[in-house]
Length: 128
Image (cartoon, rainbow, N blue to C red; front, top):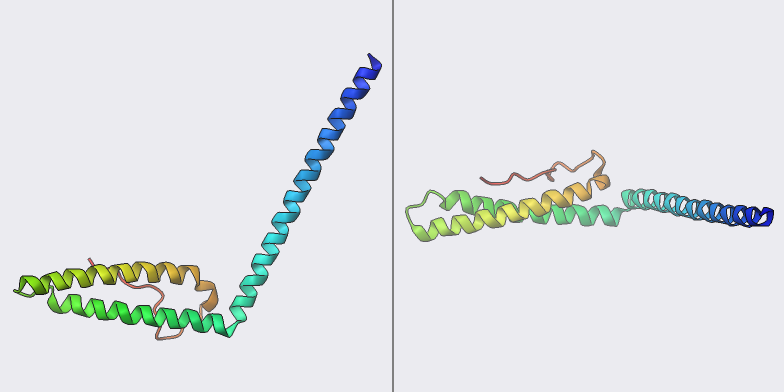
């Protein structure tokens, strides 16, 4: 009976050591991933090429949005059915661009950290 208890205690001890070891490995991996993530964000924040790419993409999206918005505003009140159709198509394109842009700026906001160039808007309006 005494040997049986010793064997059971040994098995329980091994299980506890195994669980603690696995938990320690998970925690170590989590901490390493967090450190790597922070390092990557710092590198990207100071990397001119990444900032330039984000700015260029933002400016191109803004130009596309403004073109479609102007087309929409120009033709929405037209008497011509075809021109109103152009307006609706332009509105859909503008809203799609605005949604993509807003999400893009949200994901890349760390690049600017409150220092957005004056010609780049933080968010584009959805046309109603």
